[in-house]
Length: 206
Image (tube, rainbow, N blue to C red; front, side):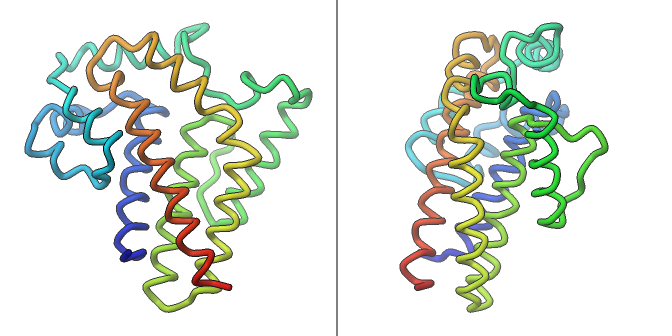
């Protein structure tokens, strides 16, 4: 497996998916998903991702911001995207947000003043770590690749993996556009590929 290429592909897919969670798609991005030839360039070609993309059809652009707002932004949105909302064991949400902000900051990522425990930020962080893993591997720096893979695996165990599946099931239940109906399996494909990338680094780094 070419881990440099795989890390870059996983990172690219994760960045797009993080934006779809954080904000409504731009018209250009919507047009890319609407065009079969552009969907064929999606960075991940696993069965979940390809099946999700095959079901995508063009949505009238005005329906996409409305679907995003209905799903995630109205008060309340139909699908909360914050980790603390889904975890009954979290009694101090500000402390959780502080830990996440510190981790993003330590990784050198831009941290907005109002950083929160939004799944979109977590997917962006995992995408960045995938890119770092691939880049380190391409530079024959197995130790740095292992550090990034360990950080990603720990982060998923402690945060994302605890809440992502019920969030994706809720999106499946409530999404009304072709694009947002595809998001759950695109995210599952991303997370599956991400886990495989981290696992591939481990035996080569010991």
